[in-house]
Image (cartoon, rainbow, N blue to C red; front, side, top):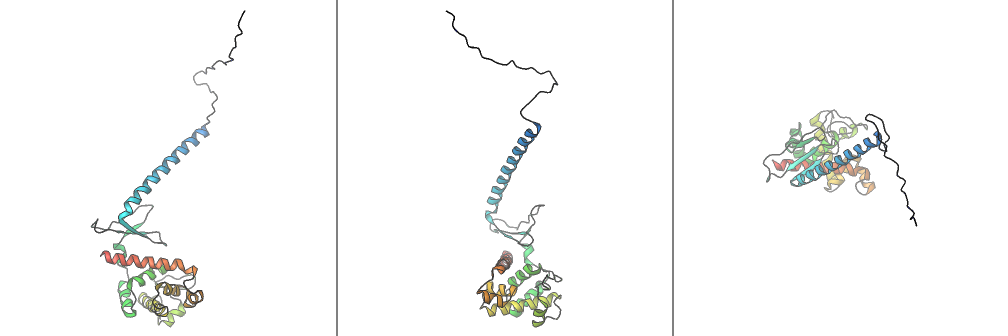
Length: 232
C-alpha cells in the first residue's frame, strides 16, 4: 500500500543579472528616513551628554542670566580658582564678574548713593534694567535716559535735562529714595512704585502682577553687582 506524500509548493529563487533593476521593499525614501532617525538619536544623546557635563561643571559656579540680553554672568569660587573665567561662543554670550564691577557712570552712581542714602548696587541695577545705561534711551511711554524718568517726574525731581547722565542718575536716586521712605524700606514695594507708581502699589496692596518680573530682574542685578564687588 502506497503512503500519501505531501509536497511543499516552493517558488524557485529568481536570479537577477548584474546591473538589472529588481524590486525591494526598502525604498530610497525609507532608507533616508532611517538614517535621519539614527542621526537625530545620536544628536539627542550628544546633547544629553553635554548637558550632564555642563551641570557638573557649574556646581562650583554661580550663574546670573540677564533676562534682557541673555548674557550669563559667571561667578567662580575663588577658593577653587584664582581667576574669573570669561566664556564666549557663538551660542552663549558670557561675561566674567570683572565686567560687572565698573560702569561708564560709576562716579555719578557713587555720588547719588551717598547723597540719597541708597545702595550703589541698587541704583546700578535699576539703570541696567531700565535702559542698560543708555542716556539717550526713550521708552514708548516717553520715559527718558539712564534711569528712565518721565518728563513730569524729572521736572519734579529737579532734573532740567533728563538726557544728561549725571542729572538723570541723581534724579533716579532721589526718586527711589522717596519710594523706599514711603514704603518703610521695603525694596520690592519701592521698586514696584518706581516702575508703576505708588498709587498702583497701594491699590494692589503689594507688588502688582505686571511688576513682578521687573522687580525680580532688578533684585537679580542688584545681587550680581554686590557679588561682583565682593569678589574684588
